[in-house]
Image 1 (cartoon, rainbow, N blue to C red):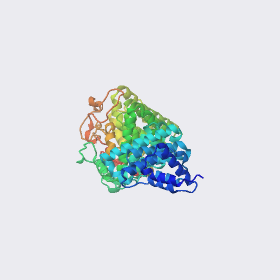
Image 2 (image 1 turned 60 degrees about the horizontal axis):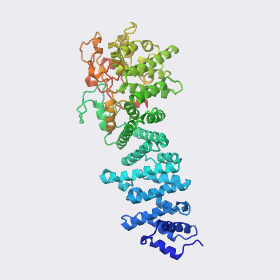
Image 3 (image 1 turned 90 degrees about the vertical axis):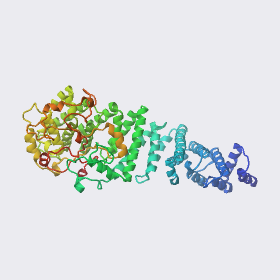
Image 4 (image 1 turned 90 degrees about the horizontal axis):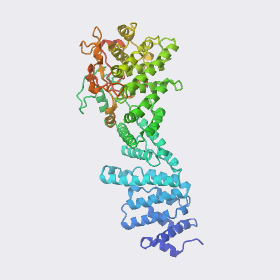
Amino acid sequence: MGRVSGTEKQEFTEMENAEFSDFQLICHVRDALSAVTLGDRENYDELVGYLHRKESPNPDEIALLETTLKALSGTVSSIDSVHHESLLSALYRMSLWNYGTSIMDALIELIISLAASNGKYIDWSLELLVNNFTPPYHLMNNLKQEIGIEKKNKVLSRVHAAFEAIAVLVPLAPLRLSPIVVQRMPLIYSKGPEILMYVENMLKLESGAIGEIVGVTMLPAIVDRLIELDVEIGWDGLLHEDAKGIFEMELDDAELEDGDDNMLAAEYLNRKSLEGNTIADKLDSLIELTFLHLESCQSSGRLSEVFDVLLRSFKRTILNAYKSKFTQFLVFYACALDPEDCGVKFAMVLTEMFVSNVYPPNTRMSAVAYLASYLSRAKFVSAALVASILQRLVDWCLNYCQSHDSIMNPRAHQVFYSGCQALMYMLCFRMRSLMDAPRLKMQLLNMPMEPILQHKLNPLKVCLPTVVVEFLRQAKAAKLFMTSESFAFDDMLESDLSRAFGGIYRLDMFFPFDPCLLKKSESYIRPHFARWSKIKCDGADDGEFSETGSEASDDDFADMNENDMIEGDMMVSVQAGLDFDPDLNRMSITPKNKPLLYLHQHNARMPARIRPSTSPESL
């Protein structure tokens, strides 16, 4: 009873050559599945054999496989995970990439039917679909050809349509999908095309019909993988003065092969040193892919909500990753795409993190370093926003001074010193744009910075000397402290600032948005990125601040090219204008460990060395 008769076996075998109705096929397959439980595996094993891939199947074999898959779709309720393990295993090994559209459609139909038939097959079905995010290795090279691109579109469109269909039938399925996708992400040493295509599918999920559920997982997982790649890029082989002694505080222009006149020689050399670095190449391509996704989010009006997810990921992963050199530009680019919303939100979040006592000191220092670098480098940030945040930082620093009657101690007051350094660093970049707007100029002149800089905590001795020297150079030319006769620029430079200091008396900080060295990524950042424009503060009576020996007056500080400067509180380009050295339109601060006397005597400029986001000494 229940066994398949000899006649039925013969009919099943003749499936290849006979005409059967759909109902008859389903009955035959159901009987074969049922017979296994009674110990009869002959027809079942033959059925499983049809699912095994053949190297060059003929049309009849293709038709038989399609027929078998469709018949299985009609009998999913009879499939048992224990008795039919070999059947499920054969299906699991099938790849959509190996077949034409008819087999693809039949297999997708079976996967959806299994997921909807029993909860225990949901993960199995989702995993099988995720397996098709990337092609088998033997087909990977085909993706460079037109036929491969066409195949990719056919496969992935069906995969994502299946996700959506399963989500409709099983509403909780997307919650099961997220961990599967994250756990199966290729490792950082996987081949570039593989990890790139996998991330492309993750971003497609984020923006798809089930994106509201899985999106909060996809983007943070991508950021985590980018950080892993980022920190894997070693800098021991890069050219920097600590290792090879070839970078000085100021480098002459180099003849660059790519013709980029705005690229400093050090930056060019460091970028060249990354050529052939497979990890850097993968990171560059992944960042570019994510940039394009952010652009599509902006076009569809979703950027604000996606930025909220990205910002949470930044706070959790990027902010305290001290070896991160490039991943942070995801946030920078998102802000550039939407300055009024994302751009302002990012600055305000960083400011709140710094002034709040709920975060640990290292997090607060990182936040203010990001804040200073962001406001200095982002062309799209308005001068009014810079002024308002400067005011908050000055108020915080002043309050700190008033509540701490202490002497200089870098370790005990590291958060305070990081705030002071951020103030000076921002003003090195933005002082001129602030002085150009009358209202902002008055606000800046009224900021109580003198009590902070002259406090016993002595931030001018602890902060990075190159930042201090450049800040004082510009402050003197702008008469920033003209209201107080007690502030002696020359004395400060010749005494306190001339003392050599190192070790704990040096505030090693990093500037996260130094020029990006990844070629593809940098092309997206470049239009929104402010390179260093140095004011020649040669208004000192003895002319020692002049780079050229000219006798320009302090009033020249306010002169500028109006074509490059927007009046009032609007966005300001820091690249143009009279009294700016065009050859220094390319600055990065990661200072050489020199005493301040050396810096002053050699008329030191902002350091030219490019080390894209962190100083190894501080790691």
